[in-house]
Length: 175
Image 1 (cartoon, rainbow, N blue to C red):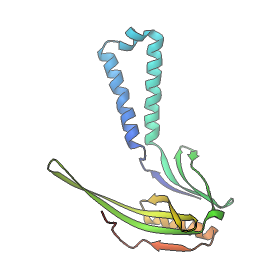
Image 2: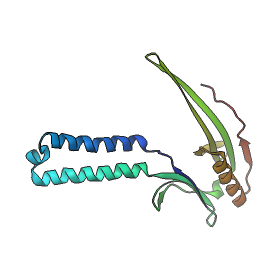
Image 3: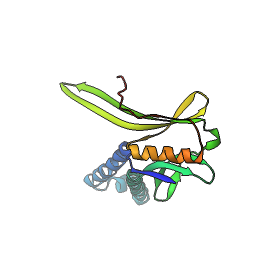
Image 4: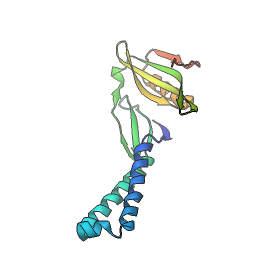
């Protein structure tokens, strides 16, 4: 079962800088009337243009990366994945290691002041924790939507009966 969160823009900042670098480099080359060809020769310019094309493609690809949780009911395991098209990467956690699960609501806010400007940023997530080592919970994933988090929990509980703690009542973490 796949619980796809869709495009979460996890790699927005690296993609932004990669996509910004490409046109700036091309602008400098055209503004300097063939800087790369003049200094590097034709082969060097082809190499530079190829690297720019590849970096632009990588930047677009980073913007299209999706994330989610994949639960394998046949092998009884779970993973958080990042995917592009049909390719998924992520480490599997076997249910035999699972002792309990916990779902918590987190409502964080940070108040920033800079040069007379004030801004408050808020983050509301539903955090799914797995206990694989007795007494030690590890964050598996932060969901933006409660429905996706409860769907993941119910699927896990259907496959393995473990203690479950639901702490999704509204609470604010101290800052």
